[in-house]
Image (cartoon, rainbow, N blue to C red; front, side):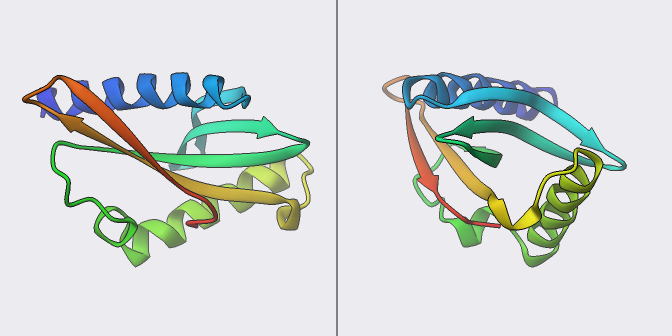
Length: 118
């Protein structure tokens, strides 16, 4: 479990760098809303985007592999609760997925960004 947690933390740090390079302004990380957690919240061009970050060691990483229907529903619920708590219009925010693929042989990482994934 410790290796998985470390991998996840490493992936989130890479995701933060990715967002910075692409002109996103980080608002919050690991934001708890009730029993749910939103990995990253950022803004760009006046829009607030909620990011779920999934870090994998294999190429076989598609949105369908990374997010189950139950997880998608929980993320939508967390996003909606955050909007309610912060008086944001739910229709103006977006939920994106970042998949970080770690290449162990070359010690490199690739990032796949899926807009409006949840």
